[in-house]
Every structure is written in C-alpha cells, then in structure tokens.
Image (cartoon, rainbow, N blue to C red; front, side, top):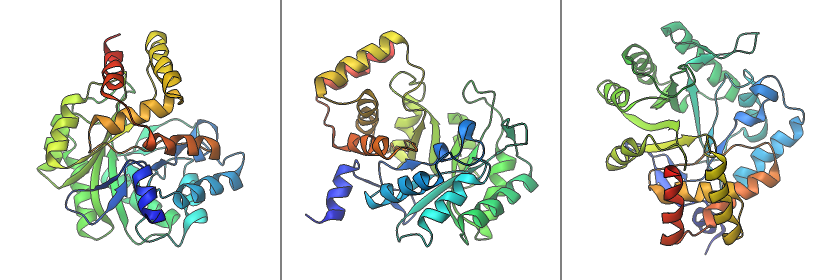
Length: 296
C-alpha cells in the first residue's frame, strides 16, 4: 500500500464534489483558528501556524476551509505563505457574506459590490487566479439559519463563476428552502451548517443532499452539548481509548458518506488527534449509544 493510499484510508476516505473534478479526503482542515484571539489580527505564533498547515498537507489533507474575513486577511495570507505554490490536488474553499470592521464585530457584506470585492480579496491574499469553491455565508443572528431569499447574492456568485473567478459555489448557514432556491440559479456543490452529535436539526437536509451527491460540511462539530450529553460522549471515548472530540468526529464520518470534516486548530498535537479520528471504528452498539445523545 502506498503512502498516499494509507493517508486516504486514514482520513475517512475520499469524496468528489458533484459535477467537478475536485476530490478530497473526508477529513480536511479549517483555518479559522490560525488568526489571533477572536479571529482577529495575527496569531501569537505565526511560525507555528505555518507549521500546522504544512503538517496537515504532509499528512494527506487536501481540503482547506478559510475566509478572507478571518483576521481579516490573516488566515489567507498564512495559507499562501505556508503552501504557495499549492500542491496539485489541494482544494481551498472560502466564503463570502461577511466583513470585519475595526470594532472586530461580524457584519453582513452582501451587496454585489461587497461580494465582488470579497472574491478579489480572496484571490489576492491566497495568490490564486480562480477560487475552487466559494460558499455564500448567511451571517444571520447567531441562532441558526433564518429564512429569506438568497437569489440576489447567489446570482452575483453565478456571474462571477461565468467570468472564471469562481469555479464552484456552495452555501453556509442556510435552510433547505434556501438550498432549493439557490439550485434554481446555479449548481451547488456543498452546504456548510451547524451540525454535531447534540445539534441534529439538519438530519433531513443531510439525507437529501446525500441523495444528490452534494457535500455537507458541519461546523462547530463539538458545541452545544449539555453536561449530561458530554458525560455520555466522554464515557464512550474512555471505553474506546480515544478523546471525546475524536469520537464526535468519527461519528460524523459514520453518519453519512457526504459529510466532510474541517476541524480547526493552531496546535500540531491537536491536529494529529483530529486526523486520527479517521482511523476510529465505531461498532453498531457504540453508534446506537451515541445516536441516543441527542435525546438526552
């Protein structure tokens, strides 16, 4: 078995975004934590941030999730410093829809001018001529997706795709109705929403996307747990000789073959723990126990 094949097996197997030639390992890397505290400014250890990215790619990771409003600009600049010229097969997914003014708040940036400028910011800071995948991120109130038309914003991205600046389009923090609306305008290759063992409101959407071969990328994979739910997860992890986060990530890989993971960290040790989740086998009994967490 070649080293590449071993890495693929370790990282949860492979997934090809629908209608594309982009194939990634199912465990990727989220770059948000490479910025400073509060996702603002440079990290305390810039060399460490570069090293984590290089180690991830050396381990076989070929799906990196980022945004130019992380920092702002910081994570994309670190990605470029660490990895440019990019290795063949590396897929960088970014997102638009937000901005970070000097007060460090998170604000919507959804006008055609905002979205077009955001694409050019990403291209410049990543050192690219075109972006592999761009997610339109609905900022919302912080309490999950809210209904409302995305047609104007998705149309702008579709136009930028026709110009050749974007290759493929995804969505983030959206409802099933918004996914359907966007699909009337353009092809959607991925959806990135809040989902984990304890927060499972998107079960029906995940299954619908799986039938279409569309990727579902959970953010916040270990958040929103009650103490009782956390204790159940910790007990299972102890029995398996694993960390709770590793079990939570492994459960997501088992949940559906279209789920891709983008755990983020600025620590090399934590990176290795996250990637090792792809080697964790969960028995039917363990899966049933974990499935019960949502009802606790």
